[in-house]
Amino acid sequence: DSSDMAPVLDYLEEHHADPNETYFGQAEGRNVVFIHLESMQQFLMNLSLIEEDGVQREVTPFLNSLYNSSDSYSFSNFFHQTSQGKTSDAELLVDNSLFGLPQGSAFTQLGAENILHSGPQLLKSKGYTSAVFHGNVGSFWNRDNVYKSMGYDYFFSSETSYTLNEENSLEYGLKDKLFFQESVQYLEKMEQPFYSKFITVTNHFPFPEDELNTVFDIPDTTDQTINGFFNTVHYADQALEEFFQYMKDAGLYENTMFVLYGDHYGISNSRNRTLAPLIGKNPNQWNDYENTMLQRVPFIIHAPGIGTGKIDDTYGGQVDVLPTVLHLLGVETDSYVQVGQDLLSDEHDETVVLRNGTVITPEYTILDNFVYDTDSGRILTADLDADTDLTKEVLALKETGQVQLNMSDQIINGDLLRFYSPANFTPADKESHSYLNSPA
Ligand code: GP9
Ligand code: MN
Image (cartoon, rainbow, N blue to C red):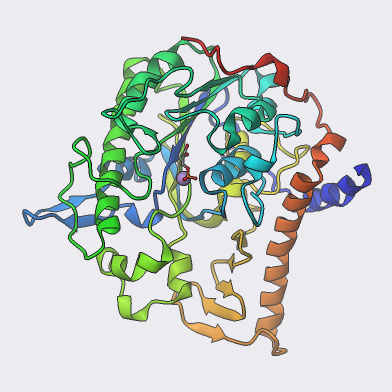
């Protein structure tokens, strides 16, 4: 009930990271374009492979150009925090600064009746309109219901805006290049500033070989899934480059802040040993520490013209995206219920918790009873019951992670946002959207 909200608010007051003056409001008034990069992992950044013709080529040349740009805040130690809800968990994390649930998908359990304080709804009072673009059926992951609670004004899906057929689509929807090409006409007509999200699909397991996609002479491992992955990743990178060109042609590029994130791993742990040599790792020294390190995903905020960009090695995760973005837009977050922290804040705590309870800091990687040195992978202890300075420190970090997860779970499970409303906030008007009449 409503009294459950008090401890959450106490936690948030203590946990809040104040914005850094240097970055606060740097992108004020800009459009925001989130790009949900299906199954993209951080090891792809600046990775080159030798193709069949013997020439060394970058797998993601366009993403790399964004990653290395002085107009980008790029993060090299950024982790996905998803679980069984996969894509939908990543969406929940990014739009709400709340975790998905330990089991199942929060999206499918949530309904249009839940109260959420999501990015699109919070920004309404700042004059933002909002939209999601996804070349698949709107009911997948219960999106058509949950987006109403999140306050999205428009949802462009295959029901409203894209015609799918055998040639133009794969298992999870419209191929990325066609998806971006068709989407810009709708984006152009939206009132500015807008908060929008593009959910890509082509780089999805099983990473199918396809006429349209065969563009990279794929590495020839014994695992077709890995080979295919590099192929669809490369295709997605080209699609992205085309999208940026459409944005320039539409005159929308300069005044937009692009927020790109990988949603979760594409290559599962059972395949990582085969992947290892391609990314400069030793397959014979493979363990859960190595698997955990591969849960890094790209996170790039690209704001044309800012010039103060950097590759930031701060440790963080998807739960930190919304406060980071809001602060760049010049929106204070101290009265909002967000369990993440601005990654650009000096007060940001570099204790990252994954949904399974694994904790990663710049110093320690804590997996069950094992503590590894994060840089080297050396085991520091295999016994958390031993009473040492190290175990005391590590247990406290584990607790920090657990509390963050618990707070988030309490908010979702108790629908606690019913009992608290930040200043200037009006809950989403769910009746006003059918999502069948998105602007054409
Ligand atoms: C489907 C797509 C796939 O609409 O977003 O999601 P995933 O399988 O990655 O959760
Ligand atoms: Mn996904």
